[in-house]
Length: 140
Image 1: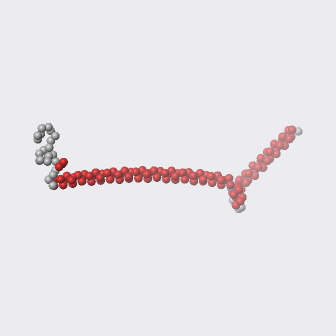
Image 2: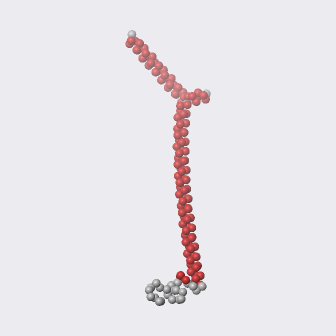
Image 3: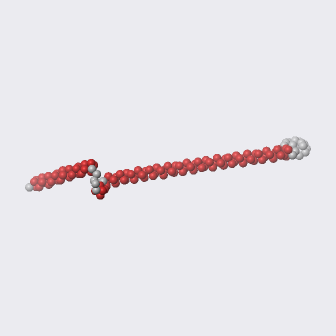
């Protein structure tokens, strides 16, 4: 009696599994070959597939946004570096121009002093026309 009940139970489970496998296989082929004309059924039937593609698209969009953000950050860093280089070059150019202007002004002052006959600090002669020297006893 127990054996017959177990056999009956297993035969029902096996029959159920065969029927379900057949139905699932048939519905899969139907979904692949034809699109449903009813949008509500299509949404329900393809919701898992659409959710996966949507999540994949969202991940790709997020990666693209991160890549754009990284590229923008890199460009901003490069722009800051370029601005620093330009500022350094401008400062060096201004310093060079100031040094050249100072040299030009000293040269003009020296030329003017020679032109007016008073060599002053630019000559090795003292005010009385003699050669100036730091040597002890010279000219004393």
